[in-house]
Length: 398
Image (cartoon, rainbow, N blue to C red):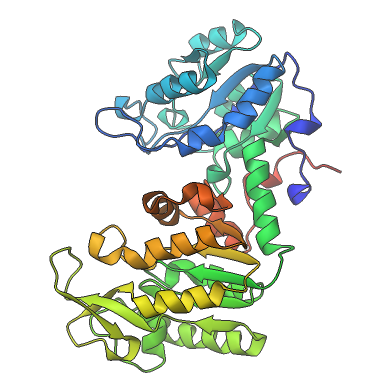
């Protein structure tokens, strides 16, 4: 069992009022259109299972950062509409997340009906860990289900306090799937295990790098992070991003990798430009020859070939962080090629983090990667070896 916790299969939900914390924090454009509904679709197995059991389903989620105040642009109305289409039945939207009107709607809910509470973050009690707010939410259900992996690292009322007041409190199918895949990659993996870590700053990935060194067989560091390591080895990097205060730390990481027998790789060539812009002149240069006044903005074609070789014998691959400024067309190839090679690999491939998720979608290979985590911060905390407080408070299997 994932993390030794009970799941939806372990509790009786037949005909009961079931309070489900989902993560419907989806991108919505200025016209109220949902740009990516992956998180809504990911929650469907849990919701459909409950509807098959004739449960009365009460869903709750946050959306954006309205800072404890009602803001129409962060309403969950577009989500209720999209979910209604997927479930082929009306999903009622409550006017708020707590209050007499909401209580009445919950009481009138019939078997097989779905009610979505309005944005939890319209109420300051959600982020302030307000016990009274949590108790009112808890009073709506007979069973609590957490299916919101993306918020499991935050001690907010709906994910951290409600399961203390409402029992049984168990994992939904999406949360179970997230944890199961993570355990397959990090706890009991098929070896060799290869980690590909990218992104802009070493400082934001320091805990991850240190934890992975004790768990993987090979580590490839790409993205702008690579320049701190190259500079630490004494080579010029032009105007590329470097965290000078972490040069010593970068050297330590390389030394620890050597001592532990972990093969440590950096890119061997870069696409460089004079500024972060689609108009900048570009050229491909070896890693030791970045010219003064130029900056590395993507890994080059030889680095892509190296990465293919690195993962060629992998049984498990973990990827977090882009290889370059993939948002700009001129610097997207390294990241897109990484996504495509993972999609073609026979290894168990797991990817996570907001930018990584976005890049995989843009590269058009989302469905070909074994598992793409729905949680950015929560996924990173697990990669660092931390526990997630909102999973800790769920009922133990034992």
